[in-house]
Image (tube, rainbow, N blue to C red; front, side):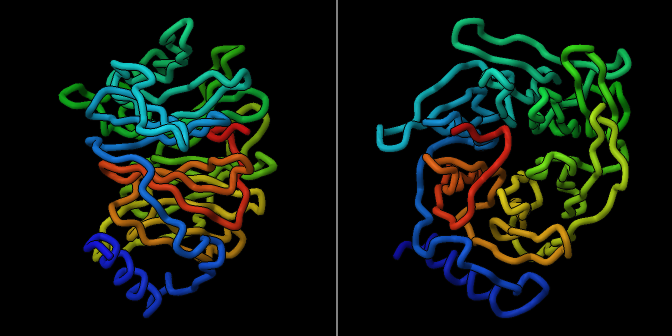
Length: 308
């Protein structure tokens, strides 16, 4: 066993030893199935399953890559990517991107290349969209922290969570009070929006209306643990309604009804995001710094970032 995997085993044992995160239902993860799927990148993010392949970003590498399981190394899907981060798919299966470099949500296809979908709120340029999901009626929801601003000043003046109706070009502000909104996901019935706040190590829930407005903001869970590498970043949901997200040490699974962390998985490197994949959407792809990992689960994924 290599040193990295010895560290994983030690971390898992430490987690089992105490604290609020010690509540464990590790049966959600198939023991011994965590494996390295791709490596050699600068900073991986934004995994999304297109029905046969996993798509992911190398943000500093300014490229989007695609990995076909069982067919060798990942290939460049397109570059430059405008430092694309999160990805999802629209109702036609076209790739939607949250771009740090441009400060825009864009659509990319092999035939048409890159097209801007939304880049401003009330006439002010967005910061640097981070992650994005699409509701089953086409509503685009995304987060907009300042990570990709560089030397550029924020025009909107806050970190936002937004909904965008492409048909009407209407942008709805859902929340401007989170410090660093990051990953987001919809509940299976799409009535609840979950958003992770990286700065405060928390996951929040909102009741989402048909027009994209939200109410009932509430804390789902706080997993603050500054002693362990990793942050709340990517967020996904399974068909049972459990919320899966990156957290200190790896991946956490929470029951949103009571805020209990019911399962967790230690990863060899700091996890940045996750996506359901595989033929039955029971595999979890995890981006983690230079790497992409894959693990089998006993859950089934749901959401626009995975296509069957």
